[in-house]
Image 1 (tube, rainbow, N blue to C red):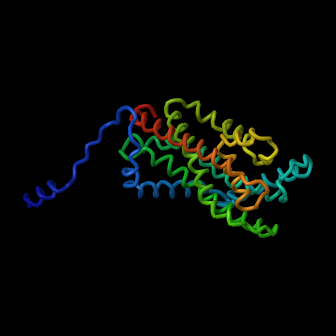
Image 2 (image 1 turned 180 degrees about the horizontal axis):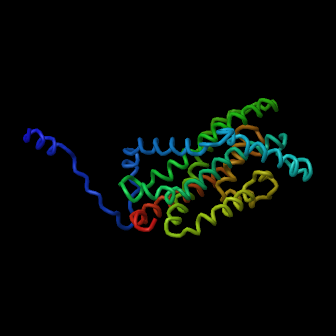
Image 3 (image 1 turned 180 degrees about the vertical axis):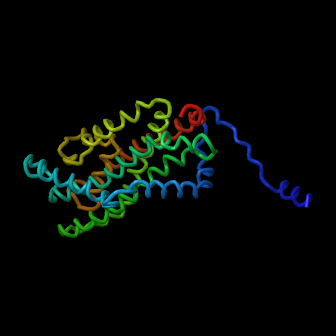
Length: 283
């Protein structure tokens, strides 16, 4: 009996956990090893989001739909805002769906570490799992609102072209942007609680800086291309082009937005890894 226990002890792997120093690598292999934890936290966030709500997941549709109604009256009917040759309601809703994904993911990921402080201080796991799970939970709402968007496209008789094949890339671009900003803000929020008060203002400002209620075509060049330094500008214009076949192809916008999103994500990830060893001490 004693010899069996010793054999098992000899076969068991030994893990030595040490705090990282300097600019630590992202270690995506370790993140993949904890994919079951990522799935569990994502599913937990989805269930908690609509727990004890009367309308449940319908909120994923109600919010962008009624925002679209208000925009259609104010900007479409009263302000006569141009809409790139498509009806204004579908023009606005097509932008609100990816924006909702981005705004929700940014809000949730920026507060994710503080919200999971009990988990952070008790067990070891890759800290990147927490903001990643907050982002993935937002994809559920995106898919629900996407069903309504498909219904509106059919209602208005719009037939998407072959550029619809770029849609997964545009979704990925929105996710990478939200994740990059979320990594920056979640890490800063651990030490500076001011971040949670600043995030609503940041999202509000970002909303009006993104061509949701208006088309980016109202800007002359080169300002239109420069506006794509806001990665969500390329996402929104790309969605309209891919689904509604708007008149102006946003190729340069998407290229600039993709480069900006990549820079935000890489810098955010490395900053997150650099200071993650302090999370459990100060959160």
